[in-house]
Image: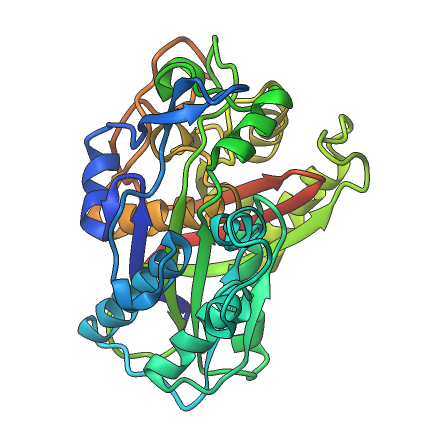
Length: 385
């Protein structure tokens, strides 16, 4: 039997700090990652609760948080995987899930530098540069590519990595998802859309599948995973399969029929080769918006067995946009490894099967769904290793 595809190593940078430990400690403690930041709002005259990545990283990785966090997370994941027994094959590929990239450097390029930079600094703006530097650092020679599917980019990248390995294109994949876009400009426009709120602490704003939820708080993250079918060593979790689809309905809203979302769940279950009765948890997209929560709750109630439970970690880490589903996959992988599901504490009445805070893992399969803006649907199935 072919070995399961395993998540062999993890590297994580979030609003909690730099590294897997602060991430897990924050989730397990039920404390949100947001802090008060200045310079937000229509006139940049107010503070805002944002789960932004704090200063840190290696200065030699460049001037931006984006480049430093991407390479820092990948570096931690490689070291972690090797410590757990991973030995890379000849062809190691790199997939980077990214939506907006170097937001701050591009803003400075136009507004501070008038479009005039030294060639070395200009090249830092290119999405290929952090990937090239990472491949060079480790001497990896497999394919390197960016993946972009809005909030579903993490799931999309993971499924693309699995497809590469299944097809024999690579032996292993370094998968990274990075989003450092919680700038005042971007937060303002998500607030204008009526889905993001920064005027109160996240639990007062983001209450997925509960009464009183308004939407989500913004977050940032870079998450790296080492994916391999190598039989030696220890995995955090196994990637069983998944599916992707598109509503083809609207640039922001979900198709109210839920036809393609439901099909995506069904096809993911079939692709993973499991029975619906084995599904135990839904790690939901769960942004706290009415339409997303309603859609996922409807599918959950119709497809999952009666003992299954659901949760979302967005009240804790924020909505990390292009890195959102990767952050949430990492939470599931660590949960399996450490025997605890790091669900957010419930703060009001809600779905009867919503988990309330950290909960012992009862075995079974986790379904990780992600509903990206514009109709990007993606579902991944994970199990304990």
